[in-house]
Image 1: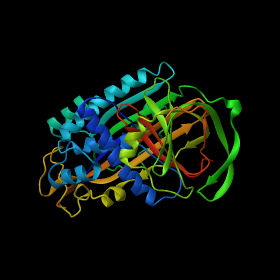
Image 2 (image 1 turned 30 degrees about the horizontal axis):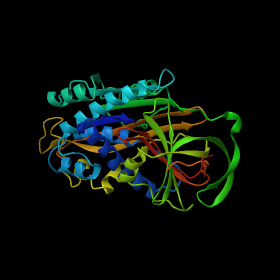
Image 3 (image 1 turned 90 degrees about the vertical axis):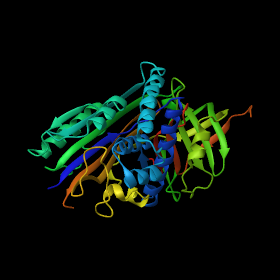
Image 4 (image 1 turned 180 degrees about the horizontal axis):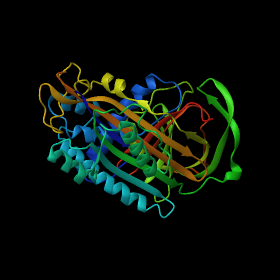
Length: 401
């Protein structure tokens, strides 16, 4: 008999000046970038991931990991050795993120929700459930996966859809759950935030963009001259466009060479949280991304997370979630991720979700003139929480059409 545990989360970002919060933020950027780079090596088109969502989902899973399973996850994802320390960091960052969003006023919407959907009658360790409830605000709701796994998946997807203003739909793919499903751990995030100063819609016009660094195509391009964070960094021009409230920014990293595809480093992202101000005439394409659900299992395995996926057989150790026996234990089966991202003259609307599927194995300087920056070729972007440098979203645009 096999029992499936599915841990599901969306996407988010965080902030805090506490040491725990900073540790969580660093883990989000470092681990998120490793995953982003691995995904980018297999895909030369548009990419949009949520480092926070992925790392939050893995952090909740990490809370139940032990032995080599825990150490491999820590090494690959940039987690501290203590799962409790990481959970504490996420709790503080979530609280700070909410406080930062309030500074954006009534037109800023940030909604975060966590919940556990567990199989009726299954016994998880009380300490694990208590930790997730206390520090991730994830209460347990029982579902009868054995009787009707399809209906349970529909219920969870509907919950995620509701929490994300219908921007994340069908996060759990068809037939991803079955009668052996034990737990679905869900975090959902929805963010809608206006620019500190809107782009004038009348100034938007079609301008050429070098699609994939090769072919020119006209795309709707916004234009505004204003005071932005700006710096010429190794390999990039960095421009930071502030959102209302001053706590978040849209970071543009424009490679110096049109064909450059190497993403930024974690130290560079941290540096971009405090770019000097400069008058810039910015030309920025509008874009909207609605990628399908993607599987991150192979990506995580390539980063060295193997024991968690029970490679080799019998090596997975999530004894912190439920009692582990040699012939009866939990292991990761798959990790699903989905995002939504739309940028226009008013601001940004974004959402994300991540699902970690687990199974149970048995018997087995000041300038006078504005600087012109034309984002007319492939570029990287991020939504960044300025106080911690943590990235809620991280993406690459090769074709904004």
